[in-house]
Length: 546
Picture 1 (cartoon, one colour):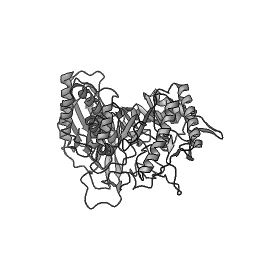
Picture 2 (picture 1 turned 90 degrees about the horizontal axis):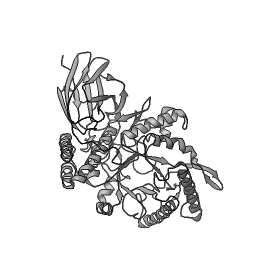
Picture 3 (picture 1 turned 45 degrees about the vertical axis):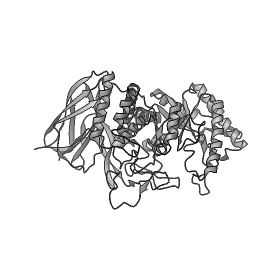
Picture 4 (picture 1 turned 180 degrees about the horizontal axis):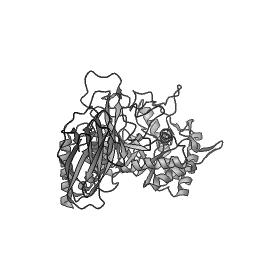
């Protein structure tokens, strides 16, 4: 009996109802010397389990069960965060920019197994194999055997892996994903601060490190207020958490934010405020003498704490996220900018050498920001301004979150998986040197990503956030379970590091190759076959220089 299923090495999503057919007899993959490609497999069977296997020298396999996840809404087609971020009323036809018309289920969650034994659900076994090369693997052709044993019989496939002489520079492209300490406690039933909690936190940190993330965000909260009158601060409660990050290989700590938007009478955030408040006293206007004194004391105490632990040279600082977004008029923007510069002056006085990093929409806050992080749509809108900053030698990263939507590159669950990887090709083409995202495991109270993947929105602007926006990992029973989107982002960061090598060797070739796939963050090719061809050309070009 001939087995049926589906196998792909491409950056694309598979689904519980993916059309199965004849299984391949051979696969070909080209990688960098330390690249870790992935293979997705679905096998149809009447049995209760399938035993997948990998044989051959040079590689070992990480096996994962692929779990299907609900996608309850399609993403909208706007740009701004105030738009219809999800289509609460399903459209009559599938929008071209999404993979399927919601609701549907998609294989995104990856549950690690000690072996290749994968359970069968609805007569299908779905597996993900990450090929891990031996350390210092020599360049050349390697021949592996990939297969499976089912109740109906065996399937076996030859895998030819061409290993190029170029190696991906380790952690060369800066990446940061913000995370929730509280969600770790809630989902895994561990009390914050306990040894059990710190062990679980380390598991999450290792998932971040898989993304080549070496920057971690510590969000300050009112727990640091030790005495209210006169105000005094104590940050030691953060010490065990911060130590975990540095011990697991992180190198830089993001801290923030210093300022807050304040609240409207109904308790929701004042998204359009022209007057910031103090983060540790959200009813205290920052632009007052009392607010200034409060903030100076906070920064002084924080500086002393960081110096005590030897961390004062390892920090980035956020003053206020997106200070030039959701602004009602020019006067409000000028008011925000004046307050922002005051806060920057306080930071630079008491934390000499601090780098101020901020998600922004424009270059309006020049002189106040050291690491500019425009959204991809914001970058395209103000491309000439941000490119001028890059030419000056300033640092420009990029970010995506609940927007931009539609055809824009992003990593939502109803978008083509390759778009999450192409984000980093866009960074390479535009000389953007880092990437930030707010959602690593941001599950607000009541949200369970195994039941619904659209994150509630408490801003009062727009709908709920698009499916998958707020997270890259799932809260599994034993710890975090990674995702196909995490793997796409990992490989994207690795690609950006490789493109960086070629940029140094041959800028013209670098741009010529990238132009085959990428025009801008809205116009690009999402053809996986073409992507593979250009990626192979990148590796072969780097081989010539090595």
